Length: 176
Image (cartoon, rainbow, N blue to C red):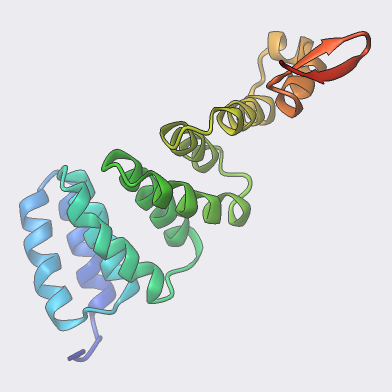
């Protein structure tokens, strides 16, 4: 049963400060007590997931992330949950869930190069190497200020569009 939420934002900020100070056990203990009172609070679930993840308890962080999303988390916190949950799914071997979660985040936050990079890692773990190559090249092309990348931008853009094909006689052809 949810009780009075007065003062909850300050209490959430306190547990976040504990976590950020490296006091993970204290942060986790307070979070679990707060969650007993406010199990459906999206920000509280987000903080609980973050703390569990920082403690190396990735599998235990998943239900908190999932509840935060289901409870309507949005904005920058949603960005963090989608990236963190997608990454966590990947490292615990839930590759399809990782790809699905990050595929939801990439179009919602298209300028987030980290989201796109973690998406490429999830695609790699799922065995979709063509899309991995396309995504990594996209991140490089969109974020690099390297003069060498700029010099080869046209070629790299073409390779992103045709990573598995050969250029023969002035056209792209499937590899046999």
